[in-house]
Image (cartoon, rainbow, N blue to C red):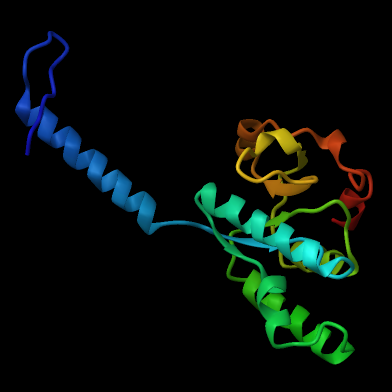
Length: 178
């Protein structure tokens, strides 16, 4: 293994360089091995085509941030009819089961739908901790622009993303749901 590591005095130090390389490789492998699962909560009904495209972008955003996204509203409408009340209820039940496997719940979108409201209430009832409710401005995510996006994230994540709560039309309403 070629190693150009030098100590603080500028001399070659292959032993320390090799150790440093192995530590970096182990850290990289560990980061690949562990990714927390995040539940993506965003509107589905209404303009379904746009909402599905948005949910795909939100999921991609989670992947880019090092998470494994679970977006039930991208999966269950493939074989369950959202217009059938019984199948919609079953879909929400399945989503709740998946939510219990997630480390965090992220809420996205320009509005809180009835399905989202049920998911948020369920997450709160299950004891999910929502340390900070903030809204992601369009400019914060360059790969794929959002109309607006709300997140239940840790305070550190919110600070690193420069989240600003006044960008979302439902900002005043959302804490009441929690």
